[in-house]
Every structure is written in C-alpha cells, then in structure tokens.
Image (cartoon, rainbow, N blue to C red; front, top):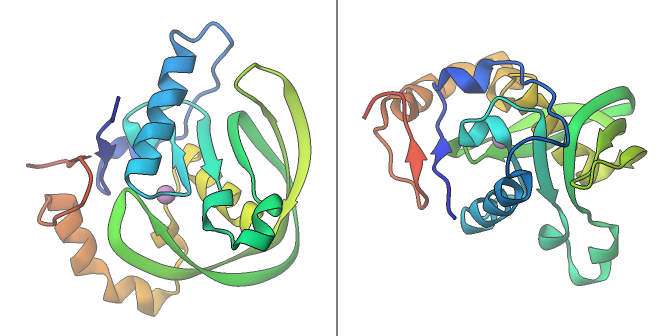
Amino acid sequence: MILPIFAYGQPILKKKAKDIDAEFPELNILINNMWETMYLAHGVGLAAPQIGLSIRLFIIDTIQVLDEEKKSEGIKKVFINALIVEETGDFWPYEEGCLSIPNLTGDVDRPQKVRIQYFDENFIKHDEIYEGINARVIQHEYDHIEGILFVEKLKPLKRKLIQRKLADIKAGNITSEYKMKFVRV
Ligand code: NI
C-alpha cells in the first residue's frame, strides 16, 4: 500500500522518534508499505516520521543508485531503534534531497564514516560501520528519527535562498509526483 509522505512543515518531522519492540503491531506490513512508497517516489531512504509515525525505523536502498560494477557495495536494509555511536573521518559535501522536501537539493557536510547499532526487521541486533554513500544515507535517515531535516544543515546563505521554496512546500503550493500530506491543504 502506498502511504502519503508527510511534507516539510509537518510537526512530526521535528519530533525525536521513539524506540519500538518486536511486538509492534503489523511491523512487516508497515515495512513493506514503506518499501513500496519509497520506490514509487524514487527515494534511496525513507524514515517512519515521513509517513506519520514517530518511531525509530528507517529503510535504505543504495544499491539502486550505484553503477553496475559498484552495486555490491550498496545496502538494502531496515534499521530499527538505531543508534549512531560514532562518526569519524573528514567531513565531505554531498548534494542531498528529501522526499518530504520535493524539488529541493543542497550540499550537506557530514563525516565520512559512521558506526551504528540497530535491530533488523527480525529484531536481530547489529553493530556495523559504514562509509561513503551508505554512511551518507544512514546519516540523513538517522537525522529524521532525531527530528532533524537536511535543510537545517545547509550553509546560511543557501538556507536563506530556499526560504520561499520551503514556505511553498509547507503551504502545499507545489506539485509532487507522489502523494503527500501537507500541513495546510
Ligand atoms: Ni529525508
């Protein structure tokens, strides 16, 4: 089932999300719906707050954006109750976008490596290190469950330049290729 994606301005996107346990109702259905929603919107990641649930769950598929010879370096994973325990390496810029903030991208600086502890969809615990594009998408989605959006991490001048665009998104004065839920309609 395709779920509407909550747009910039929705208060839930600014809330720190809560842990869940293995008894969370219909978790597998929810995860399947999130995959379906993410792929339809051509996203590489999707976090539960973006579909209106303030829980610590996000999904990532970087395989789809990597060139054929690099596909094996990509990941397709579900992250539950994730905790970033360490970020290392030099900060590097990468042009990010977000399904909750359509038609807007910008360079964000983030550390190159990340160590993350999380549970997968079978509630098996993992402790792993990622770098490059995988780390990047993890950091972006992790921010979502912490109530942080990438536009808050843009340089001051760029932030200023996008204020009107953000206001338009908040007001629902945009067209997107997928179903969205705006604060005001
Ligand atoms: Ni996002």
